Length: 330
Image (cartoon, rainbow, N blue to C red; front, side):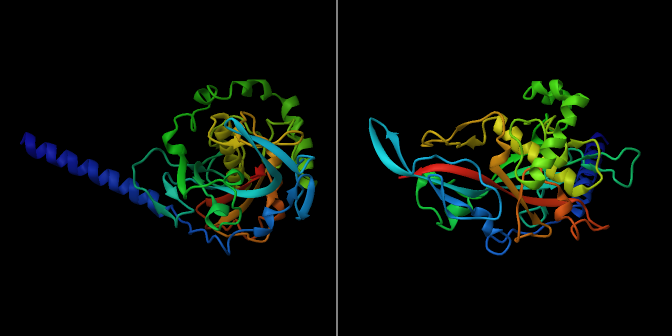
């Protein structure tokens, strides 16, 4: 009888686990990102040599080195190279309420198990808040297509899953997240949050203000580094906010490097615990790819959200993030 009871317990637990996975799988949807038709290739511009644009673009650029000729150390020797700047498609981000739902990989569920389903309460709760999981993919598109040939001017490698928020206990706990963003307590006040109006206006007409690093423009506050949003009046606004927070979080953890160069050569990438917001752009790639435009971080979604927030949507979105890269072409 004891053996029979143990077998029944295992069977019941297996059924409960499979039903939980099946429920999450039903909430999971997405499409593979087509690297040709789903990408806003105009967003790679402007391309600069020194501080002179050799190919202009519709979006504002950041500062570039004044001299087109730079010298980089190579061990005990030095090499002369050309200072180059362009916008690189750097990462894909899933934003989903269904744990382990790989939106940008075709919309399948890993089926690892239940870790708590994300919550979107725009229409089914007392408070207009939400919680989303974020998956960050390494996406070296310029390397795959051999657009840039210098190894120092592009991210190499293959498509890879770099971060899963389901495995991070800080992503759904504001108290734990203070470990990596202790300065958040300094900006949890009306005065600091009111300053974000300036960042929202700047990102709307030009590009965000790096000095207001705690602001995510029209999306809200960068802090804390969690998947919670206190007010969800637009799923696109909420999902973009948590994706931008993830970019900041990965900067803080040293998993994303920086390459700013104005007066000196940028021979190597280096850590940047504060995200340089003006050096980031985003575009939607799932479920409705927007290959015609990209936007500075913090810019309002009202410009492009029409037709992408359907009543029967399960709140699974995918974004492509572009990063400005200054480098020395050797």
